[in-house]
Image (cartoon, rainbow, N blue to C red; front, side, top):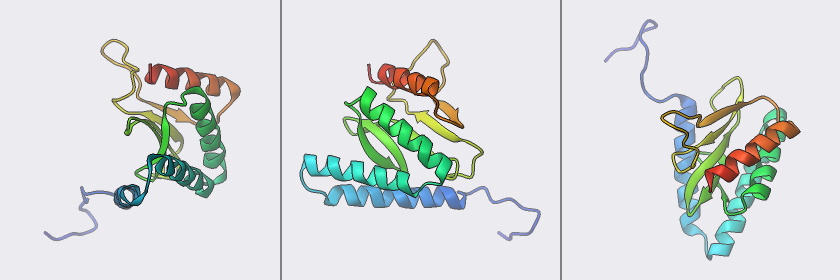
Length: 150
């Protein structure tokens, strides 16, 4: 197959390949960890370190989202998921924060997996664009996360 300027590649983007590599590394790191308590503490440190690496606006939002989720749904365990801060119940990701920078998007996203109990009829939102985390947004996140794990 030849490539030229007019053809398009339908494979993974560089950002998607990087996310998959990050996920593979996360799995390796998780297997090497010791006790359950050690794993939980190290996973939270990993999440906080990933948040600290983000650009200012994403970092500020991710810090607030982390605080709201940690306070509002302490049953969720922080962990990295494809290089993103995520929150899991019994090892399964329920929600995650995707920085705008991650996939070169114009906004950050708070996303929910199919593990989240947000079902509402035959169609419901599973992702929310974030441009700022205000007190009102914090209340909405807290309510969504509480419902997601109920």
